[in-house]
Length: 235
Length: 235
Image (cartoon, rainbow over all chains, first blue to last red; front, side, top):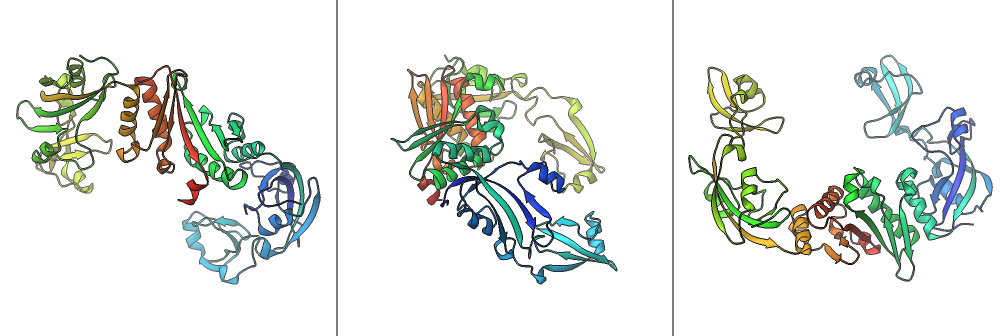
């Protein structure tokens, strides 16, 4: 049994109930077998902070009732996954309009629209294309096989987990974290390799927010950058 | 007499020797009278770090031989100001080409070209425009009336001068600077109002470079951001 703000790591594979089709998985081999391998994401156990609401509702709710190393298969209805289908989200557009955008219209093709949403081409005929703007998994009941493989217990591990999620794991080990419980202070030294990273400041800001929100609400979180002559001579 | 890395503040007015025309000044009233007032810059004494080479060569060289509160008038030949004129930088372009760029060509008009350089329209006739890509002050001997009005003596004042030059003076007083000479360490706390400033990180990086380069070469410069629950509740 877990509670709000617990940091757990899960492994899972998600299937559409009707078809058995795998639509998401943390297992790299499974992803490749199911032809949904995405080289831009990292596979392996995934960090979940309970209450952060980054997962579909039904999965996150269910996780509170797991124990460490427990594996369960859970069924998630559409209203706790990607919503019911909405027939108002079916649009008919002229084939020429898609052609002008360089899109070859073939049935079942998934498009990313200008607003970032996904659409599925349902049919193409007579110069008309039926576009379905419902999420591709809307209306589907999903079946997740989930296992909680790790639970983080102390603040230090949680802070490193957040650092690793925010910055590449290549850099996370170079962060230095000093916890002072008597002063209620965390001092985090940022590695020099990140000083010129474009999104460093928004990374620091978000990380501070997450640490205070999920790990140490009463602490001051200090981010430190240390410069010396060698910082500039080596770059 | 000043030396490399001295921090001095100067007031000056620069004139073209031939015409007496004022081309630059730190005095707001003079700027307005001379019709060169620029509301995007700040007037008043200007920080100069000797050796930083932000000024025209002849002016910076001359400043080494000033004393505090001394005012002198110095003559700077083109080769130590904006260079000699180069006749290869005269171009003839069709009037239509400028029109297409929305430019009304009138003699003596100064244009900013796509590469950021300035050009002066020397003449317009028969559908042709003579463009002069020399710096508007190239070939001119300049006469500067300069006074050194302040010299910074201690590291703390120099650091604040650099902070003020880098960030708006509205924020510079909110920086906290702790100098520890025994540990050869400077700890600079960044004010919360700047945490979401777009260029904060490049500002921190540049400031660290300047402090180490011009003020405390043997020190470690720490920049600290402090977050707590209130950081996020107030924004």
